[in-house]
Image (cartoon, rainbow, N blue to C red; front, side):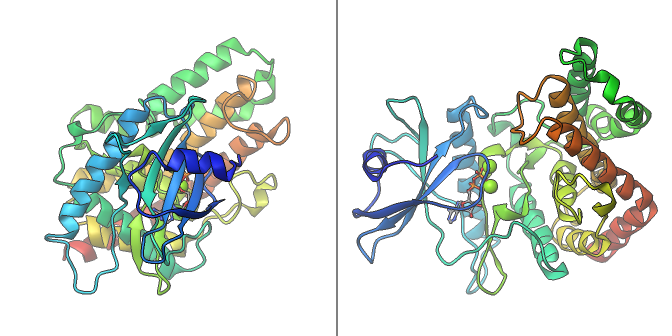
Length: 373
Ligand code: ADP
Ligand code: MG
Ligand code: MG
């Protein structure tokens, strides 16, 4: 969506920002929110980033921004304390409140807006091009979890209930299968077979959690690479996009990061022969991640990382397939079988990962030994 400068000006003047707006333009490549860069007319005043929150996905906007503010405050405290480094480039995402002291502004069209300080001289990558970057990314998400490891997870709202709950996703799938509203069930016998045959294995992470073997911690829940801001020298400045910070299991962040990182093809690649697993990126990410997280994770949590590697492509495939059966109401599709193609692509990624499973296990174990030595 595009917005006129006068519209942006009318929104922005409700926030406690300094200076005047010189210009406003769409920014970044996020898929969820609309992001607008606001250039300050005063050279000595900061620039800002205005975002329209996607309230169709995030129904509890207040819960989302309060979660972000609480997590940012905790991170800020850490960076000024035990995590402080000389000449450190690390920064925290800062929400700017409205003049009335609210963390968001609701406009007359029913849209929700929030304002951040713009983090200068940063870049984010949609695709990972080197093992070095993968390592840095793993380290960044591991460090993020480490800084939040002593924060009480019950302080946060579960803004997207059951987001990574495989039982919930399976239930939705079986319901869609029974309803078969589009008559598409007949097209997917192999996919149904795959889902059923791995179901027990895939539920094991969830069962560990239910049995009290995994602590509920604070997790990011959208560990895509473009949610890390780097400086010019590829040092991590900041983890951004905290919309989905919630109570969760650490393995969720690991599994979802790996899912997009190691895939040699696009998420919706139709030619499944192009889908392979880049194991050197897997190794590098795991090394960086465990260097930071290895020391506070419990042995069961380390074990759960392995399960999450397979769970995430499987679960994402199920979500695409459920949407396909329901008539493509959730994900945006560019052609009629788009969700089916995405499903097959995720399941192919899962199969490829499965073929590397002993290597995946031994890499996690070896890196954990190094990290805890
Ligand atoms: P989405 O949920 O749509 O992905 P993000 O919060 O990730 O939204 O923002 C979209 C993009 O805007 C990011 O990928 C990043 O490039 C940029 N961005 C977000 N927050 C900041 C910030 N505080 N400073 C600089 N750039 C940012
Ligand atoms: Mg993002
Ligand atoms: Mg987001």
